[in-house]
Image 1 (cartoon, helix red, strand yellow):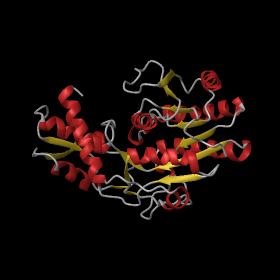
Image 2 (cartoon, one colour):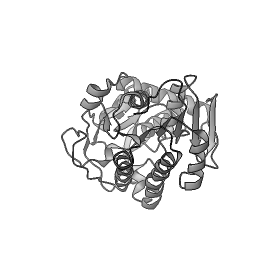
Image 3 (cartoon, helix red, strand yellow):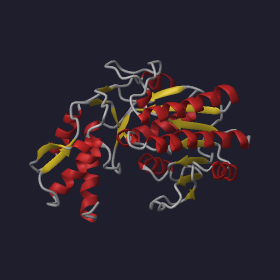
Image 4 (cartoon, helix red, strand yellow):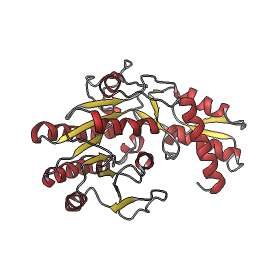
Length: 322
């Protein structure tokens, strides 16, 4: 196993995304960081000291060259298409970026011939749906094209560890939320609407999807801490759930957000927020992360919800079109 310390150079793919931004803030000043973003995008602000590079993960030659030149000793592979809901309309792009992008990263690490730990971030969406907490041994039966793409991605990673001896670890995070998340995702979607209603920018009608679902939810900052601990302590070729073991009802999360607001709203079901195959319960078993890695979540969900709402209030105040 590669020893990952504060002196090692770490490469973060998908660094311009929601989780990537939180990870870069966590790494700031601790070690050399190379951050990959999509070509054509804008380099995020507030990440001084980071070596930003525009790399297309679907371009095998570019990935090979980028990893050879960066020579990282650790890679956190976050990049990918992240949406369950949109995966039903964009199956091929999800497969291209999630599967081929991961293949190109692993191929480049293999070709570089240097010790390098790779954390491949999969998803709880690979599991067969059920009411019981999903452990790492739960049958794998993805209920969506997104989940299928993540299962293929992690199978590539596990075969690279087993067949080629690469130092690869797979994380299966469950739902995570926090400041800066896209309004594509439910809690951020609610918070954005509440902030805009409070500011008088929208009528007091809050568009929602299915509020009866239950989701194991974590603060993104706890998830980032879990990733860094996995880089230091995980066993090669092993899979780890990142979850809380609790699955609140989505309606309860919305009601807690509304309780933090002076706005009076009515709820309206929006067809575009409904998924073709919405899993009723997504709940994880966190025992392996606790016993082997020593990680448990620290941030209360109530604090996370408050931070998300405050972040949207600030953003809407600065830019009413946000």
